[in-house]
Amino acid sequence: MENKPSDPVQGIQGLVYREDLIFEQSAAGRVGYSLPEAEVPEVPVDTAIPAHLLRDEIVGFPEVAELDVLRHFTRLSQWNYAIDLGTFPLGSCTMKYNPRVNEEVARIPGFSRIHPYEPEELVQGALQLMYELERYLAEISGMDRVTLQPAAGAHGELTGLLMIRAYHASQGNPRRKVILPDSAHGTNPASSALCGYQVVELKSSKEGVVDPQAVAEVMDEDVAALMTTNPNTLGIFEKHIQTVSDIVHRKGGLVYCDGANLNALVGIARPGDMGFDVIQFNLHKTFSTPHGGGGPGAGPVGVKAPLIPFLPVPAVERDGDRYRLDYNRPQSIGRVRAFYGNFGMLVRAYTYIRTLGPDGLRRMAETAVLNANYLLHRIKGYYEVPYPERPMHECVVSDKHQLEHGVKALDIAKRLIDYGYHPPTIYFPLIVKGALMIEPTESEGKERLDRLAEVLIQIAQEAEKEPETVLRAPTKTVVSRLNETKAAREPNYRWKAR
Ligand SMILES: *Cc1c(COP(=O)(O)O)cnc(C)c1O
Image (cartoon, rainbow, N blue to C red; front, side, top):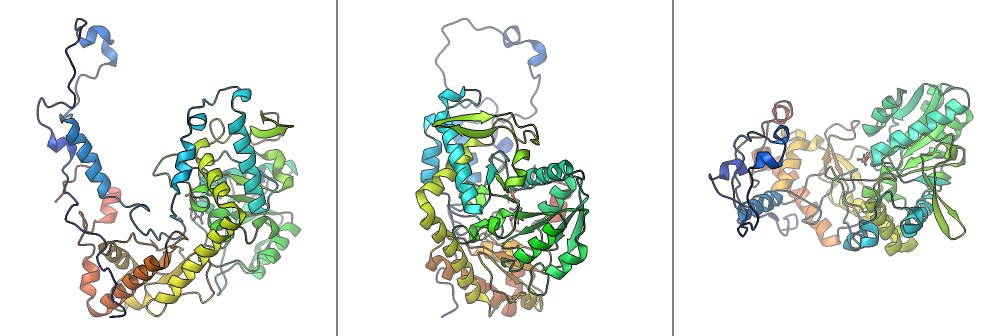
């Protein structure tokens, strides 16, 4: 049975518990603590705390025991999915394994316990780490200097564009437009608009890349920058990038690299050598820091020499063997983040770079590219491949064949959940109708890739022979299909588990 997944149901249900809202588990008078009787006299709470600071009523505040609370949140956590549980092939997002050594190092008290206002002479090690990380990122990307401050990729884009704006303003004209290919990530137009730029959209070529001719047609002296991802959001390398950069530079424009896909290039090619003037690093994608889940992230930005004066303050400088923070940078765009950025993330990325070393980093990128190509090779007979060009670290297929049986990309994604896989990114990039964008990353071994391929093939066969099965999915989760529009427009957090 060649196409039968060797382990069709990776997720099981037996020990995944139903869970009611904690409010519904409340029993009057139940408490989560047990303390010995106080040895000091009790006083009424309103004599100890000013009345205006006291809440007079918390409606239905849950009264539960400690174990109830523990089980409640542990059970809810079991409904979640993570890279630590299984394959997470979310294209563009690069959900790679976060090595535990990163966490060990980030928790060393000398890093985790320092206060941002500690004097420089007491935090020389932290400053050295930032100084060196900056150099590593500059070396990897081919840039001249880097700021570590921005808190995410999108924040890095904004920071980069603010520097581009400041640069052009210093030349006498901030310019008004930014050119973006139609395959761009949504944050690119958003960052451009936040910076006050008007977006000029560029149609991608039939091969799915930026066409130099199309750039030449829209490029003029009112364009501040062309912004593009390389490899782009189709996973395809922008093979004309040098020609495109030349066209933009000749009219005085700058070229911005959305570095979200840098994990395909590390140790192999450098954006700084392709004509890019600015790049953001998504540390959580390329350098294995955890994806935030709303927590702290980091999106450093590298620049070529002409933009150095505009970098955010403070910059970390070295005098002999001492490190210091430099605030005296008159042309700086200022701070973009409190203190020095999210330092804990910088420690993790630094650890990743140091533990892998140059050869390991290159092997990371090569393996990511190999894995995506292997997976595509295995499934391409079953899913439409919209662009024939060989992809790099991620591949895009579409639901075109399955649509003939009424099965959409969304249904395929939901069915993958039944087989124990997190779905890939769907409906992005926007230029591919019914896109499924798969990025296995370098974290997965061959057996795992084979299993994912077999499951994807199985779903393609189900779509043909028994489409209802796919349309009903997921059936093995705690919650099945939601009305996603209604859920977004009228969120009801009091929904009850079935
Ligand atoms: C992830 C991503 C971004 C945004 O980065 P965040 O760190 O999520 O803010 C921008 N562009 C592309 C192509 C991306 O994949």
